[in-house]
Length: 117
Figure 1 (cartoon, helix red, strand yellow):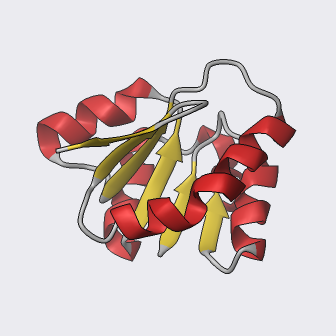
Figure 2 (cartoon, one colour):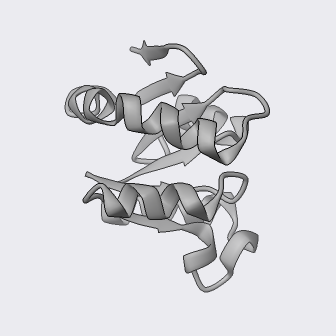
């Protein structure tokens, strides 16, 4: 499974996912860094089969209307510090991996995972 972490999430999250064995890039790793357009992020996601991890509802809108990005993990935790975010991922990463085998849009809150069909 491969991820692309969007700009409003910390680079630290991308590095955590890498250390857990997942092929992960952050928008800061891209040529235009955090100024990379949503269109370009969607294109990279589709080209490389990368799941976009974001807090940006614009990706939800594009996913629902034109099925881009490839797959979407929408983070709806509100304001959260990096340690809490990492802990939520650590607790749910295996389950998320299993869900993304057959689902394309998942939402993660502070205390739940919501699979959208």
